[in-house]
Image (cartoon, rainbow, N blue to C red; front, side, top):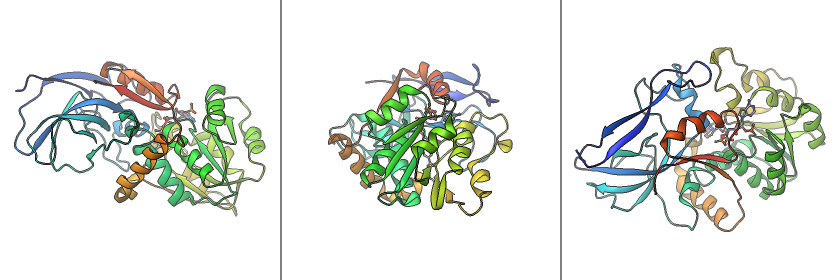
Amino acid sequence: MTAHTNRKVVLNKRPQGEIADDDLVIREEPVRELKDGEVLLKTLWLSLDPYMRPRMNDSKGYMDPIEIGATIVGESVGRVIESKSPNYAVGDVVTSYSGWQEYSIIPGDAPMVYKIKDQGVPLQAYLGVAGMPGRTGYCGLTYVGKPKAGETVVVSAASGPVGTVVGQTAKQMGCRVVGVAGGEKKCRYVVEELGFDACVDYKAGNLEADLKAACPDGIDVYFENVGGEVTRAVAKLLNKGSRVPVCGYVSAYNAEDASKVETPFHVFGAMGENKPEHRFFLVTEWQDQHQEITAHLAEQIASGKLKYSETLAEGLDNAVGAFKGMLKGKNFGKQLVHVAD
Ligand code: NDP
């Protein structure tokens, strides 16, 4: 055994609806010695992402469910503190899918592990707008949404890391960009700081009329992040030839019975002549462009062209509370857990 003790968050019980107190619990265990070829990572930052909630259910989605007793999945920024692999040196900083834990051991040839190259941006940005969510927004918009200059692009969960990148990228492409977000504070930020043309507060009680007023020429691209009432309001305004990249539908992630949820596919699939070209996509479809797009987004941050905000929880003990809050919109921008320095 090494001198380190690992703390990790494991799935104790499958949540029924919202996560209850004993669904996720913290376990401790000693960190074992490395075998040849392995690397020991100390987690510095942990990313909390909406997709983790459906993976706690016992239903196969586009990824396998987390097993009972297993560590909750998640991407992190970690530092190499021991290495028996020629591929990594002590001090290297990487992103990896280490899960919700303070230490992790990975094979030196593990896939989806990337060394962070210093581009002058904070490390945790590689879990947010310069990381998986940022690439999701960039690729989904560019390759599935295919916006053209002058078109109207609407994005929901607009102040989050995916929405932030979608909106600012669409502005750079010459589009009219309208966000949808929960609450006046988020909407003001989206317009005043991120530079969207308008942002509709879906919690203000006037969603359909407010969206119509913000989109006088209809909607050409809707980047779907939330589902539910926002999807139904958007559907009424979609133009002929419109495109909808279906990225996720977070409003349904806490549903007790996922099979009874009205998904965006039900709404868009039932439309008549203005039925949009729509499909679900996964960010990993463009995994071959990981390095290039990450470098592009980091450069945009460094040069001040890509703005973002983040919400920080301190320590693994606060990860579950922060995660539950994020699924209800309590986060303001990328939700992270600061685990160690
Ligand atoms: P966010 O940081 O934006 O967090 C989720 C946000 O969803 C909340 O802040 C909240 O914002 C909004 N929300 C929560 N409940 C509701 C509701 N009932 N109705 C409407 N909005 C709600 O998340 P991300 O930017 O990380 O992710 C955005 C989406 O992208 C998610 O659906 C996620 O699953 C998806 N995704 C998909 C990937 C893929 O490969 N397909 C990869 C990565 C992410 P507000 O307060 O504004 O409502």
